[in-house]
Length: 86
Image 1 (cartoon, one colour):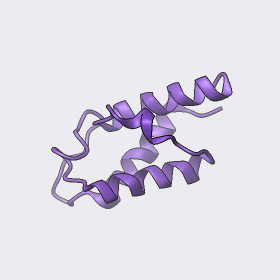
Image 2 (cartoon, helix red, strand yellow):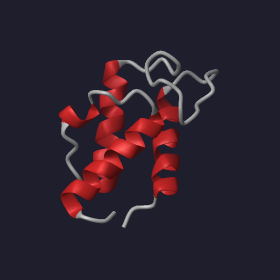
Image 3 (cartoon, one colour):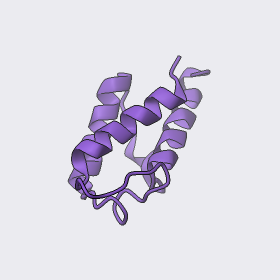
Image 4 (cartoon, rainbow, N blue to C red):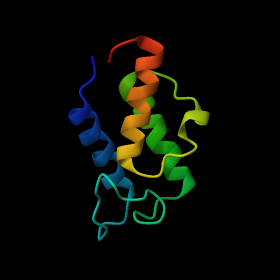
């Protein structure tokens, strides 16, 4: 079972390591436009999440993900559809 709050904390922690230091990071911040992440950094974030959760994240589920909050919800939906309850 995976805790939403802990996973969001982990997502935000990973983003803090990648984003410019003067940027305020919120759950609803746009990863690219607000936080200044480049596509390579977004891919690194996904790899970190794959390692943390011990899963493979299909790229097609992430097409409309723009914010950390959307990323969390998309991951939980994916985990529920593949594993049942999370």
